[in-house]
Amino acid sequence: MMNTMTTKTTVAIAVPLEAELVARIRAVDPAVTVLYEPDLLPPERFPADHAGDPDFLRTPEQEERYWDMLNKADVLYGFPNESPAGLARIAESNPRLQWIHAMAAGAGGAVKASGLDQETLQKFKVTTSAGVHALPLAEFAALGILNGFKRTAELAADQAGKVWPELRTPTRLVNGSTLVVTGLGEIGLETARIARALGMKVSGTKRNVEPIDGIDEVAGNDGLAALLASADAVVNTLPGTPYTEKLFNREVFAAMKPGTVFVNVGRGTVVDEHALLEALDNGRVGYACLDVFAVEPLPQDSPLWSHPKVMVSPHTSALSAAENRLIAERFSSNLRTFLDGGELPHLVDTLHFY
Image (cartoon, rainbow, N blue to C red; front, side):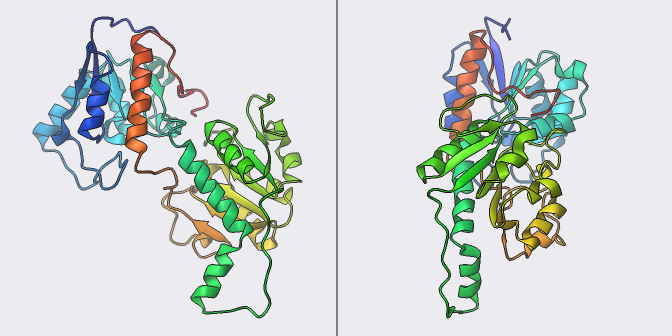
């Protein structure tokens, strides 16, 4: 996308951000005006709390100032109010808007939830923070694999009950085992890198099937069941799209070897949770480490909460103290590309919404 505003570009910070990181964005180019009014933004409750304190309320005067600031911008850092409704409103009210950078790696769902039609979505670009979260997600996936292989759920239960088993139960070696990663994008490849460092053999799926260095076999989703036949562990990194909806269904879980460790750091909608529970109960899945769910927060009556072979993580595995800095660095690099008339990376696909 060529930037026609060669003399001046206005960036508005729509979400909470530390002042030193705002200064880093300002330093990209003297032709850039950065609008940042911290009193209009909710305070963060924890690092990278992009939505901020939900109890924060702007006065009517502050609300007017907030939207006036955003409507002056050519570029937004974050969705307004970090919500699909905010995206829909700014798309309709700001005709000069050219680009929005989303805080999330999987921003397609929010773009879809905004309800904007294709004609409106073609008026500006939306980029994601894909890749920023790859390392923490990959480390969490490794945690899930190790938990399953080393029986940490059983150890925790024994410790809670002060049980010292009469018979010692062996654990499984990660080294030499086989991992299948669904979604060999940045998160999937980082997961594969860590898995290989642990001595695992890695295969996986990719929308565009092509050879990848270090990956034994690459297949499309239609070849997933064949890959699973030899897998000791499976990590899902796929986004939620109509093409991935309940990809992990009863038939796919049935293709797994008994005792397979299953980790989900992608989107909860990729998994049929009823089928997962069946697989846990019949032993096809020996352990599940889940950071995402079909409905979030996970409903109180979900059996996943109390299942002895399940770890529930409240969609926090991507969070790290470095996240704001990493996103600001990614945005600053993208802003340089934008100013130079280059093609922005990690664009949201407004047809498939990933």
